[in-house]
Length: 333
Ligand SMILES: Nc1ncnc2c1ncn2[C@@H]1O[C@H](COP(=O)(O)OP(=O)(O)O)[C@@H](O)[C@H]1O
Ligand SMILES: [Mg+2]
Image 1 (cartoon, protein in one colour):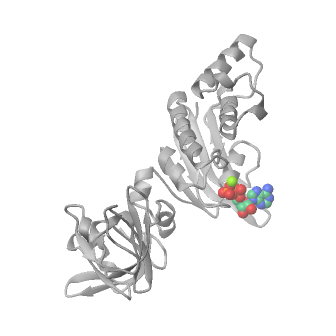
Image 2 (image 1 turned 90 degrees about the horizontal axis):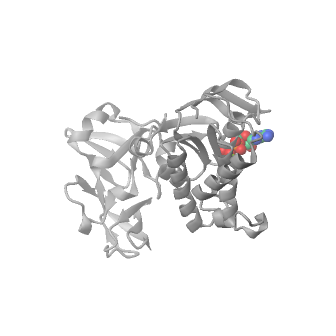
């Protein structure tokens, strides 16, 4: 078992900077997920860690040496194979040839091969991307259980924020070789440091409105052009110094409600809108709305009566607003 440290790691491929001064301290036994859009440097980070690429600058530290594949006596090999097969529910498949296995089974065999070597650190690079949706959810849960059972450091790469949110103990959000934020799933969700992280984590994504913060009669408002919403007094003090400035106002779809089905105790503001599209999810409905020409999405109670073309004023829960500096894109808080 081992922790892993990326210390100011830069990796260049000619003109491309795949990793830009990356520093991450991975704790022993942690399940760290590197997440970000395609091309942000995730695979490069893993390949550098595994020693498959040389870093251009900086160092990568592994607490203990990763175990090399060694010759074990036959009974020891048998024991390890059986144990790995049990963990992964593969025992009945041990006698099969690879081509007799489904995609999901092959994936589990690949993990099994890693388990029998008892490595100090497990590295996964988008292991679920070839599986269908149902198998992906199952395998996701299996990998989480595997981590719990093995109590070993896992470093897992994915472009899928949902995988990151469901499996990680901590998530590193990357873009263009740069680390944007490293924190627990909950902290990332509640306190994204900038517009990119706010929009990347969560689905449907956070709604953003370009706005000007205006002060009028002692109250603060977001002036979004086609509509205006008041910031509750309790939150206003944080943003006073931004009065008169351009900001990005963010609110997640789950914090916009059908006014007929309001959760208790919220501080709400209604925003006159037109329903553009409704999407029934079963347990909830996604409303695509337009406030003037500003599109946004609300995740509302499935009992909603909203229908396409209707005018309605959805309720914004103003206790859950996010504000970002327009220029720096950084959260104001
Ligand atoms: N061997 C290589 N030669 C040149 N450029 C590369 C090489 N490997 C990766 N890159 C570039 O480095 C960047 C990061 O790639 P990669 O780590 O594969 O991203 P990710 O895994 O996040 O999709 C990309 O711009 C990619 O084109
Ligand atoms: Mg990759």
